[in-house]
Length: 110
Image 1 (tube, rainbow, N blue to C red):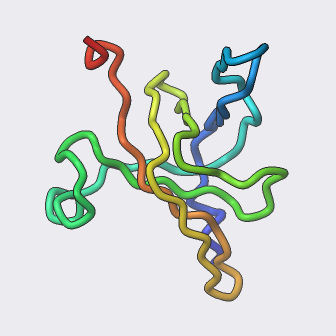
Image 2: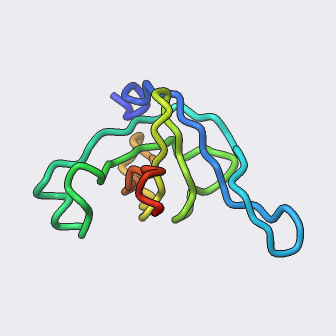
């Protein structure tokens, strides 16, 4: 079975784009099918993440763009995640991007 059967979430990917001069803003690049789940405490500690805010994400490999660190992903619940790491994995028919994500919380900006 291919990994695509687990891609059950509709995710909006936003990339940082130059508006004018030095002004930059996140703009929606694509809406893709993928999957996001919270990372367990042991693995979050291993990757240097914050327990409860570190997530794993998976996207299909045949996208029109390549996910990059600092991209934002919004899930169907409106939660925003920031891409920290991107790994391109190729296991025969299970080709996909594996992402380490950190959940972004607007209250943390203070």
